[in-house]
Length: 328
Image (cartoon, rainbow, N blue to C red; front, side, top):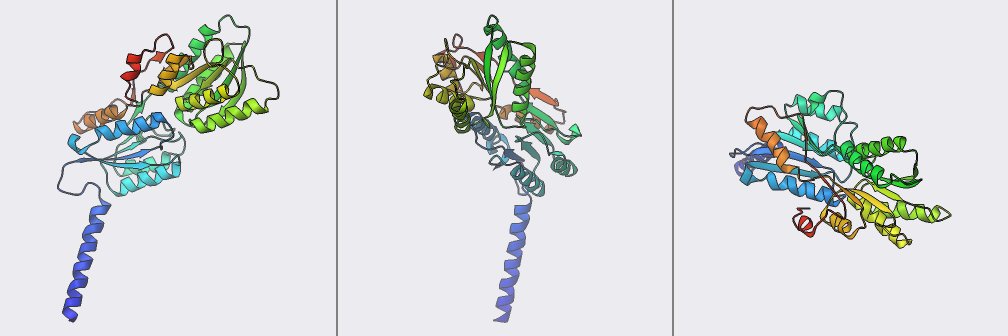
């Protein structure tokens, strides 16, 4: 009886060791799949959801990859935890869509010491040593903002006064910093532009609707609004909803709404005239990230910074064909 008990204990211990060994190393096994650990911001916008879908579409077993995916739910500490977990699991690559630019030096240093290349996607990181990441794939957010402010300059060239409400995205994120800086630079160059409010919309429709409504209600007299500069489409949706609720017209003869992303829903509103100027920010970055990894796997050195091609839209240039062909 004692021998049977001892045998069972030994077998149990062996099984535990095998399970622990497999769970601690993501690259273990008989396959030759490249293991990629992804830390995504969350699902705060239509753009972000499309970005996630693009990533998942390319990092498949059919393409030679095993994808480990973590949704940070808008919390940077969750991203730090995910990266450290990926380091422990000995993944081949780490892909990060950072919530904000600051605070990344320590955890990226850990990845570097572990010999794991880190690819930064969409937003950037502000680190002392840029060797802590292998490449950045995303958009030039300041250039996006410049496209919008150049349109504003032309659109209001003859106006004596232009009253602007600025709806900012997640504070500290690269998209917010770039698009905000472009507007602030343009404000300094146009003496007839008045920034009457700068509100935190956090890239979400619900919060933008709330802060926009509060501003209109608490202004005392009905504010004269010429432009609402929204730092993403979901913020534009919330702003339009609030403006129309309180009697404003969006578009020709009314408030000019500017937005960034160019999602399908936003392009529909642009074609209707409710969004006057739409700047594309392409979320389909998965193939570009895959190209970076493929370059490394082939023994090459990828470009440090890779920007996706983007365009702009107005009610006169958006067509149903463009909307129908949109992937997001």
